[in-house]
Image (cartoon, rainbow, N blue to C red; front, side, top):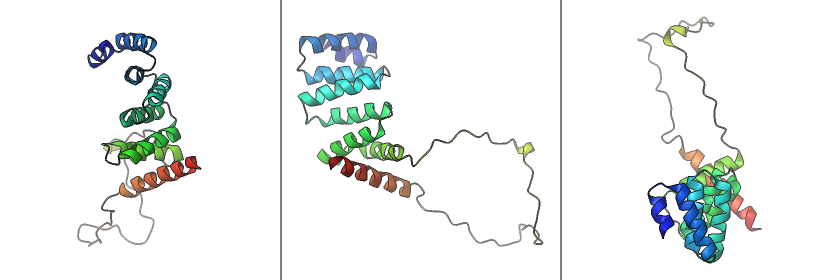
Length: 177
């Protein structure tokens, strides 16, 4: 298919023209709709990509790769709950899909508003930092003072990932009702 060749070369505008022709010529070709969706996604038009991927899935509901691509388009469009639904369905068909669990976790986290993206706070230059004054009667520790080792979690991100995954499953269960 000419659109596939142009897409693989990164000629997305030209590929879109070819996929558009293909969907007009054969509106029942899921491959053409999938290619059109991938091209729209590459062009930064996720809302239009969603429509193309949905059409491809109507024609071939068992295409798990297209379902993941639909989830990606929803994610890029800011429709995180929809992305969670698509990733969950894809994992329901094939739980070993590479990278989809991480996508589900990210979409779940954003759908629930658990993580807010922090604003960048510039680090002060070393000459701008001033030690805090001692406000207690205890002198500051020196190198000879034995302090207990600082406790850290062995895997700090694991709890966040588990929480996001559970949130994704919860959202999926709510949608099924």
